[in-house]
Amino acid sequence: MRRVMNRIIARSAIGVPLVFGLALSGCGAVDRVKQSLFGGDNAPKAGQQGFVEGFIGGAVADEPRAALIGREVLSGGGSAADAAVAMGFALSVTLPSRAGLGGGGVCIAYGADTSTSNGGVPQSVSFAPLAPTNSLGGDRPAGLPLMARGLFQLHARYGTLPFEALVAKAEDLAHFGVPASRAFVKDLNAVSAPLFADPLARTVFSRGGTPVAEGQPIVQLELAGTLAKIKVLGVGDLYQGGLSQRLVEASRQAGGPLSSEQLRGALPGLAAAIVVPYRNDMVAFTAPPTDGGLAAAAAFSALVRNPNDLEGASARALSAAARFRAGGVDAQSLVQATDLPPASLPSLPASTTFGAVDRKGNAVMCAVTMGNLFGTGRVLQGLGFLQAASAASVPAPLLSVGLAWNPREHAFHAAAGGSGQAGAPIAVAAGLMNALNTGKPMSVPVPEPGRASVMVCAGLLPGKESSCAIAPDPRELGLAAGGG
Image (spheres, rainbow, N blue to C red):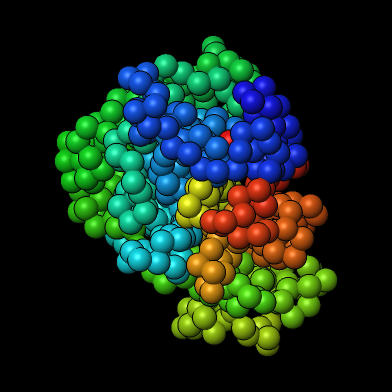
């Protein structure tokens, strides 16, 4: 069975979908949780990999190690939100070009248990790195760091395992080192010359001034120390404790000064999602203040009307986002609007996506950003992470994710996360439409320059575990991991 899973994981890294039906062959589709009564003292405990046998769900990320971290959490009995939180923190270590404690993003989260206050209807979690309301100057304007608070809010709402245990996984990666992935090295080589003007960045991400190569270990001891503080003292310490004071001082030195008042007031948001009906399903997208979900919803609505007009749907997404950014209009009204004038957006920042679905049908899909590749390009002294570029100095990214569920069956159907700058919204819309119509993830590539990660359970989840499949975009370097 271990050999089967290794083959499936290896294949998914090059774009072949992870199909849970294959992963369950020879293992049985019945969800069985190991009990110490039968396994003795050596049996895995809750939170330890191997605690759950049989179907565990699955995880996907644009960077492979993060996806494997998500799988570990699901194998330990964690929820989809637990897996997403662990992956988000892990990406701050393994893909700091696009994710980090100095940045932020959005998530769409679905709780399958309708007996709880969180169940039955997806919610939008927004924690993008917002521009400070009052600038403090500096030559590298920085956004307010919301990654840690956003992931904490996601966990508080949907998590089950201890938060500190999820942070600890990223701490270990930073402390003991992680091999540089192909996805990270690709980003690093694109901007290494200006990035290495910062001595701290050069020390962490180079070998004698030469960018680290794929497979070379990256050790980030200062980042490990910051994660350890968050693990022990809580997320609040980064915003109104000792870490906050160090962040304020380090931000001045890095040219992106922030104040204690700004950090205290940097809060994530939880809101009702934008919802579009489709056949027997409802499809949810993240709500403002970010507009990537709005753009994806507009594109999806256009595809509902004309499934073959991908170009028109993409144009409608950008028109909706441009109109929203102009102000004075309700987001929901833009989703169904058919009379929007053509519009374009400036060159947009990079982002990355990750998501998970657990054995109970809970699901999360997220998109995060640093504003630019590697944010402001300067590592914070003593903290070990980069600041995100301020949305006041660079255009805001289109952070696009979506999730489909069946309200009658109270079941998860599909989710997609999009990247590729202006192509992110149509990537989500096309990825979801294809998954809902075919029951397969990424059977047709989404339009360029978009990239999509897709999860789908054609027979709905919970109930039809063998119908589930996950895939990263086959043109990129991500990984899907899970199964049984």
